[in-house]
Length: 216
Image 1 (spheres, helix red, strand yellow):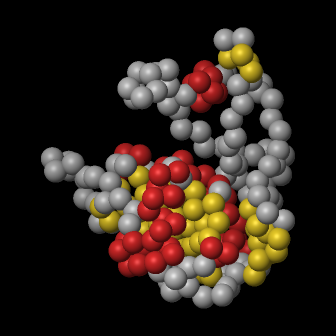
Image 2: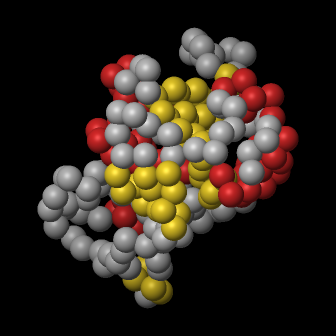
């Protein structure tokens, strides 16, 4: 889209499934101006999308992803077919969106594939798609294992937080993820700092080979 006369492009992941024909759905977190001192202008494109009225248009191209679920226990990574009995995901913030689509598709079509999701956020209020994820976990309790982690829960809050508190770490991953096997893969999607400084070193310590770990 053109915003203030400049061409602006952003990549988003649909959350709708392949069998939902004729449309696709996106989840876009709107970063508003003056909410964060590091980004005083906010999200240029997300604010533009939020300002659009029903019937107005934006240009779209795709799909461009390099991770594709294809069939039962099978997915493609950079065009190479992988066989997996277990898929684990560690996501941070808006990194949940491409994973949510895969979770829905796999749970609908692959009852023999086991799924793990550790979803990390700064605060309880930042957790996207929580009702939808909770519903998937409740519907597939023997197939989909879900854990939330938030960096902090304010002491004066009235929120009863029964999940993990703290940043993603090796002990956190050790406590939640299954042991590595030749058919277990781990997908990472989130802030680069979380992936590079926390997830990748921890997964190496836990014995996951580089070939079994991929980033979205």
